[in-house]
Length: 241
Ligand SMILES: N[C@@H](CCC(=O)N[C@@H](CS)C(=O)NCC(=O)O)C(=O)O
Image 1 (spheres, rainbow, N blue to C red):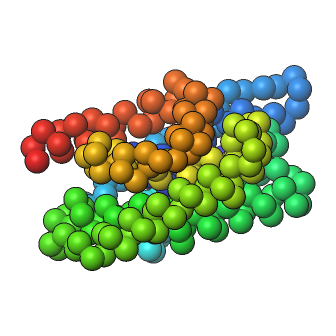
Image 2 (tube, rainbow, N blue to C red):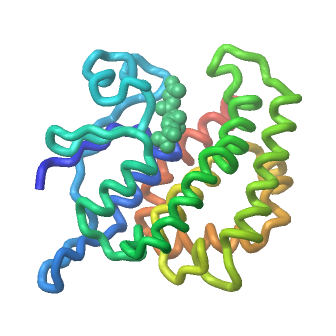
């Protein structure tokens, strides 16, 4: 198998989803050869730096965003496409990305929904508040309120639509899929906010909180390791605020 490179900054939520997937997905090409995790080289590529602006990186991702991968000669960006590609290329157990057409289509509908709802709300809220100075902007309270509405509505949708019955994971599954990793990585970014702010939004959604704990438990110790850098950055950010 060709070498897999992941262009990564662990402050990025879609990047963490891809790295976490590689660490927890077990190859199952045959019953006699089970290998833990997908081997990869993490190529540190810093957000808010020149790393994304080089001609070398442009050749990998002309959108100049993270994450991206190079698998031998093949390159790919967009985290959901990367997760789907890796699940197929490495023949990981079926629950990550089911081969059954209908189950796969349902999972893809969660992923499509994520980008225009949960991510739009969560990322939008951060960009309009604490991240505004990084983009040379003043906080936009009106924009933040609109994104908070979208975010809270997204928690409600996860609780009422995507988490079915008492199942541990999305779509009523008893094992996680790539969608669980993608959505939970997004929500973890909200730890950048004050506890009061974060609880105001997610506090009422007990089922969502329970599901996040399930994903964490199922993927630890890797979950904590992959999120450690984010929490270190948040700690120093809050200290200097
Ligand atoms: N839809 C993309 C989102 C990629 C994205 O927005 N990445 C952010 C980090 S979380 C980024 O690279 N931002 C750099 C920039 O916009 O300059 C995915 O899922 O991969």
